[in-house]
Amino acid sequence: MALSRATSDSDGSVHGTFGSRYVQQSLPKFRMPDMSIPKDAAYQIISDELMLDGNPRLNLASFVTTWMEPECDKLIMQGINKNYVDMDEYPVTTELQNRCVNIIANLFNAPLGDGEEAVGVSTIGSSEAIMLAGLAFKRKWQNKRKAQGKPFDKPNIVTGANVQVCWEKFARYFEVELKEVKLQEGYYVMDPVKAVDMVDENTICVAAILGSTYNGEFEDVKLLNDLLTEKNKKTGWDTPIHVDAASGGFIAPFLYPDLEWDFRLPLVKSINVSGHKYGLVYAGIGWVIWRAKQDLPEELIFHINYLGADQPTFTLNFSKGASQIIAQYYQLIRLGFEGYRNIMANCAANAKALADGLVRTGRFNILSKEMGVPLVAFSLKDRSQHDEYEIADHLRRFGWIVPAYTMAPDAQHVSLLRVVVREDFNRSLAERLVRDIEKVVHELDGLPSKLVRDVTATLVEKHPDWKDSAAAPLDNGKLRSAFEEVIASQKAVKAWKKFVQNKANRVC
Image (cartoon, rainbow, N blue to C red; front, side, top):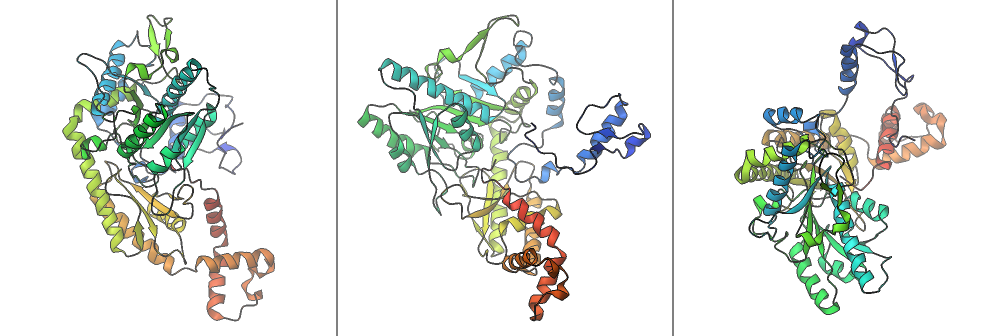
């Protein structure tokens, strides 16, 4: 079955606009057409459909890079037909990957000796990187338990409930129990004290997040390291730490160089980071770095030679494009430390300007932190009349894509909106967004409240004949006016409610 549901309710054909200059018959949507069509027609038909996609620059839901320099775009196209796994055929690309691994390892303060190479791999994204790091922890824990003659069938990982969904995937796919530290109102990241309390002899690692996807906040990895060190001494365990720095790994080294979260902490054994987020590369590149060679079990590394030479590989994927690796190396040498620092500082300044503008409206609470990923998470102070989902829905009329969602357990009662400030989101856009949010809030103030709409919807459901508002037994003129307005937009209301019900709280 297809995991993505078809959203079209048309006749199952693709109807081209200007494509009719080349073809006269419509194309089937869900099966291969019998005949070929001209390349111009194929291009035009697909281009016409893509017009209805959102504008990536206005997609404030995504951390993923949406703009790169034209020179890098050219390099990406030069490498678009290279399969990175063919290392013997593309030795220069392999060398660029190794350089990136070493540059990032040094950025994360890996304890490398003179001439010692870092241990790490490129991945499709942080999801694959987390799978690989988790497998390494599981295998090391199993090997140790086997050597001690102890059971090794019940591994667990301790995380905060605010982890990204890829951690749940790892736990389910590779049969590891996920022990989550629940959140609470006002504290939306993992509490290190509670996390260490949950650690037992079956814990393969504690996963800390440098940049929660919910509100961008950095978890206190230093405190976690100190508390876990004490527990390890008392118990004789050697429970390690993995840092999920998908969003914050390319931010903290430049904006907060004194913050201890990386390999400066002895228990941090591996770190993942998304090159396609604040690493400033288009979607499709992540990295996982290990502290030392002994932290990656040798039996997980495969050696193949049927492509021309001995090639060590540790990956869930085999074939993958070389373009993103090339693009990552371009950004690292093009920008250097100074360039990344300037970009991240500008993002942080724009995020602060946006947060300040929202505060001035008097309508919102800011749930993000100044030290963290440059994003603004905010919620309505008063949700009695309208909520964050309505604001998100109305903002789409201005082109903005701003996600509304609920916090993780046990803070699901907190709803919020989140704006990710990327390099391509400038001060002018921040000011325009604040103005548009003010317009939306003002418009919502003039609409019937959620209570009136819910009551109206219930009445109409139970009394379909009342859709003709003249038949509705309402004497109060104001209530009747509200009733008539809601009836007129009943279709939109139902669509909105369906949208809200389908929202997941595992944000990306």
